Each structure stands twice: as C-alpha cells, then as structure tokens.
Image 1 (cartoon, rainbow, N blue to C red):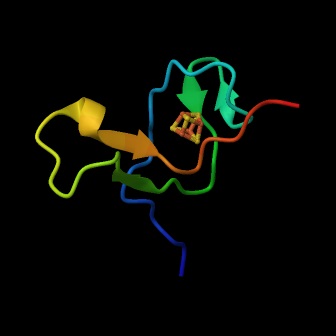
Image 2: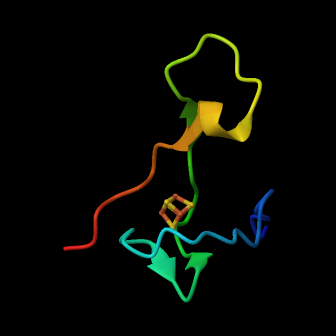
Length: 55
Ligand code: SF4
C-alpha cells in the first residue's frame, strides 16, 4: 500500500538548507521540536530539527 504523507507540501524559505528546493522542503519527512521552551506559544518557539546546512 502506498504511504501517504501527513504533510505533502511544505513551503520553507530556508534556502541554505540541504533539503530546500525552490522554497519547498524536499525531505522525506521533517521533525519539528520546541525551541528552548517547555511549552511553545509562538512559532518562534519551534524549530526544524531536520535542517541540514547545504554542503
Ligand atoms: S528540512 Fe526543515 S529547514 Fe530544511 S527545507 Fe525542510 S522544512 Fe526547511
């Protein structure tokens, strides 16, 4: 059975990321975590753990 992604289309402007292609995320999956807080209340309290600097 074909696996269906929960988030098929991720727009991302972090062009220096290895997975970024034309301002879209091309990673097979991404992991998002809280950013130095026990409880997030704004988007800046979250971060993309999958980010990898372009070589
Ligand atoms: S892995 Fe994260 S930072 Fe990199 S393109 Fe995807 S969403 Fe953006």
